[in-house]
Figure (cartoon, rainbow, N blue to C red):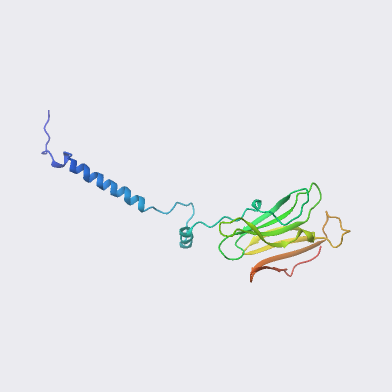
Amino acid sequence: MQHPAVPELAHTTARPVHWLATAAALAAVVAGSAVLQPDAATAAQTATKTHTRAAAGAPAPAPDPAAVDFPIDCGPVRSEVKKKATGDLDGDGRPETVAVVHCKAGSGTPPDGVYVITRPGSGTPRVVATLVDPKDRQNVSDFAVRDGAITATLLGYSSPDVPRCCPDKQDKAKWRWKDGTFERDTPAQARSV
């Protein structure tokens, strides 16, 4: 047997005091890591403003049009969401949903309605504004929500004699939230077909 070149070290012999000190240090590290958590990882860089929002809670999702009964009379058929778009229209930090809805017809071109849906707090989504009433017998194309405004091209008919397949009127429309209501602003380039 070969003898070590250095004398036996005192700390190589584990005593109960050493085990208690190690256990206490390990418990302190675990407790500290539970209290001091890093921010959640994301794929994109975040700004200070995003951290402030995250601390206040995640923003509510935009209201789902499938959870709403629209004020449209479809008789024996059901209504159908043709298009939808979301955005913060009133500047409160919560998104609204704008839906283009018509009756699900077997054939023909049913008129569209344009509705604004909001969700008060964590409540049930509801329709808060009708921008285009289906009774006006118009169809909607080129529909979008951008920069707090709703834009659409409205296709209509100059008389009841015009076939419903072929609208002969076209108007550009833009709505913006102002003083507690949606105001329609018709751009200067609005024209008839």
